Amino acid sequence: MKLNFQKNILDVLNITIDAGMEILKIYDKEIIVNSKEDNSPITQADLNSNNLIINKLSKLDPSIPILTEESLVPWEERKEWKQYWLVDPLDGTKEFINRNGEFTVNISLINNNNPVFGVIYAPVKSLLYYASQNNGSYKINTDKNLNSLDKFKKIQINKEKNLVIKIIGSRSHSNKEFEKWVAKKFIKYEVLGIGSSLKFCLLAEGEADVYPRLGPTSEWDIAAGHIILEEAGGKLKSIDNNEILYNTKEDILNPHFIAYGNMSKID
Image (cartoon, rainbow, N blue to C red; front, side, top):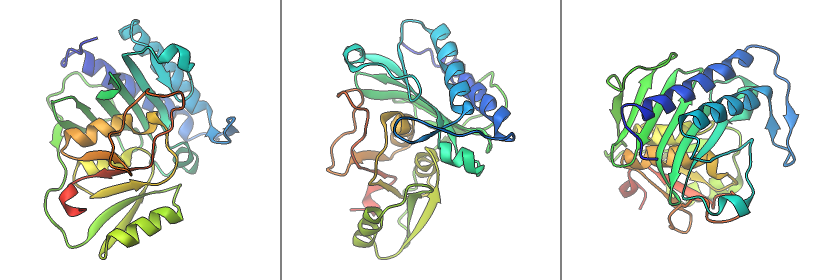
């Protein structure tokens, strides 16, 4: 599928917003939490968002397969995929359960193992970010469906050199490796705790400088944020300074990685 930037991108942005609205229907009610096989939490909001996204993306173009956190596809089938949708229907389930507003809906389009389009929507904050390959990264405040791309604001990383480096840490997944890496790299720094893929968005709009993730994540956690960050001028690399690729192996775990705003501040 070759995206028509005026039509298909709007369609996917509105699907993301619709999924966010579906999540909010449950957000203010009693949240019943179950556990998946890996002991991570799952709620009815995860499932409702997942079903809505699959249904609407399938109607948009039935030829493009879909991989989501809640609808896994065997490796033997997906290893042949050249293009597919990669979806986290509710990124930051712990933030959702804790009702701190820092959860998102993430949809990305992967082409030849790289993200070429990504959208992140934080429904409580009414914030939507998106990017497409070679077209920049954009942001808008909205709690309703969009009919054009005209009101989006282009965003970019902070290129100024500050004395104090702003480092993003996970709201729910801090660890000692993170603390050691930060202490080794920087003298003057501030740690900002935030949940979900909003970490990438903060980097992309210049509100932070670096996000080291030295713990487990899955491909659907980062793909949309990956292209939003890189189209805003940032970079995402593995801890070994290799490119992050998608759907290249049976498991969907990412290597430990560093997401950079302005890399000149880090080196």
